[in-house]
Image 1 (tube, helix red, strand yellow):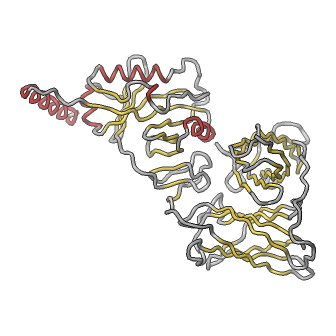
Image 2 (cartoon, one colour):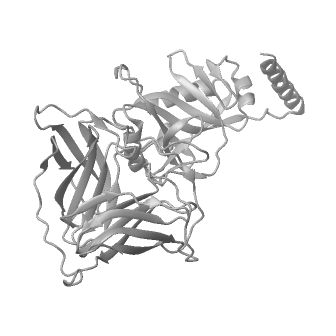
Image 3 (cartoon, rainbow, N blue to C red):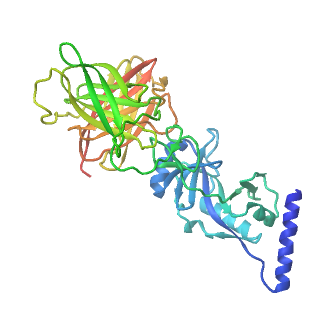
Length: 442
């Protein structure tokens, strides 16, 4: 209270001196900072908001997660399940009310209308919590308003209007992004945090590097043909030196998918890291042609999804001939007691496509709600095109669910047929279900 009184006296002296000199006191101006919404699932809504506003997904320390467009934000918080949608505030009306309240107290707002901001578009199924403005000097603005805040700390203050609406004033401390999510590089933050999409810890944004990381693969021959394992080394794209430091992504340093050339065989395995940074896998691989898809995050680098073609000892057939014929499968699979129904929502090339899986118990027909986290996620999805030149590894967005609906978002690079393997864990067993879909010409 004493601090507020001192500030008020100081402002009064400034005004008095300005009046004696014939000058108007300096006007206080706030810039619009963000709209804060409550939504059922912030992680899932984040992607929709980023698409709607063409912005960058961010985490603001102490404020929340959302989307940034220039220096304006839409922030998302989880809605209380018991919250009613009745009486939902209109963002434009709430903005106008906040501007009137501030202007009446001698504080200017830029811009004066929500329509002049970059985030005026409404968000479906969202409830507006409050409108926020940024101040260069928070304490001076609080003293000028002359109103006791509902809550206050060093970085922000909340004011309750007569209508019940809330206005937030935040200290303007925009800082450059220094951290990002290794699985969702569009999620960025000035400081440490967790990704609201996949809940992974954010890592420092590495400096830009030229070229692609390389992997050296050595097969361990098996008596009678085939291989009993692999030895993998990762090399720096610029120096060619061995890379020895890696960051765990979904509980592992290295995810490896082994696909037969005819796309009938699939394995998702995790080589063990050695003391010198190599990866060693002990896994039987039959005689034949394969493509390895390696997913890893080198320390100081970006997430890598690399492919490498191999043939095992004993293979004498033609080398990587025509691509196999993929037949579009039905949308339903029965695997290990699970009925899995796939629904790809309007698949199209070069844009995000939602691929949904509805799971139920094969014996009872009841929805499966007892899925267990598999490598820190509700599921994993690998998709490859017909000639094995493109691969996509995806994880569900939003909260880790126990089912019965698991949704992945992926981008198919071109029209054509793709084979997908969806993986879920239930009762300690990893269930793998293959599907083939057609991505039509746009």
